[in-house]
Amino acid sequence: MKIVVIQGPNLNMLGHREQNIYGPMKLEQIHEQMGSVAKENNVEIEFFQSNLEGEIVDKIQECLGDADGVIINPAAYSHTSIAIRDAISAVALPTIEVHISNIFRREEFRAKSMTAPVSTGVISGFGPFGYHLALISLLQILGEMEAMKKAEDEQAKTQSN
Ligand code: DQA
Image 1 (cartoon, rainbow, N blue to C red):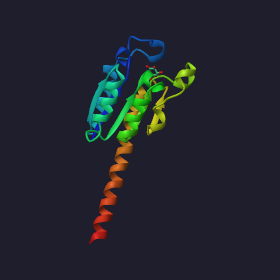
Image 2 (cartoon, helix red, strand yellow):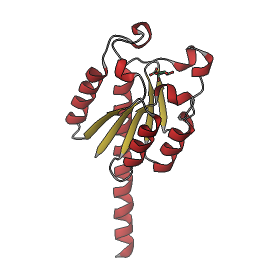
Image 3 (cartoon, helix red, strand yellow):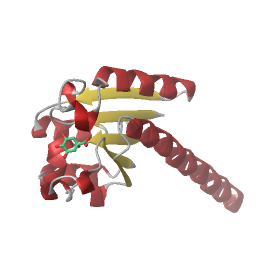
């Protein structure tokens, strides 16, 4: 099982940028913690960060056939990018959207996410812990999907006998 974590623009600045909003944790520290949880669960995890919309679209597309699920913080592109929304929709993988801050209690322009309606779920306002919540939620979803597929396969097998 493989999960890809995609981080949008300016998230490489975590630990430095607006600490009053995003806290002191660096992106590498967040990824380190996620890596440990993934390892404990025998799941492969890959991390990707880009400040460029097209690179994020390319990465989402690459997930098709390569990953089982996606965790994405599209950052500012959440509020503007139809291209990222369409890419999430096109690959149709279980996708959890994360926002470190609570986008609903900030400026009005942040309250609208273009990408949220095509995501499986959204976690917003729990700080860096939101990434952990996203990971355990995705593991739960993928586990349920696997169990469902196994049951369907077994049913098909008994029906063909
Ligand atoms: C963010 C919220 C966005 O509005 C902002 O542009 C970001 C980070 C968050 O994680 O809280 O860069 O996605």
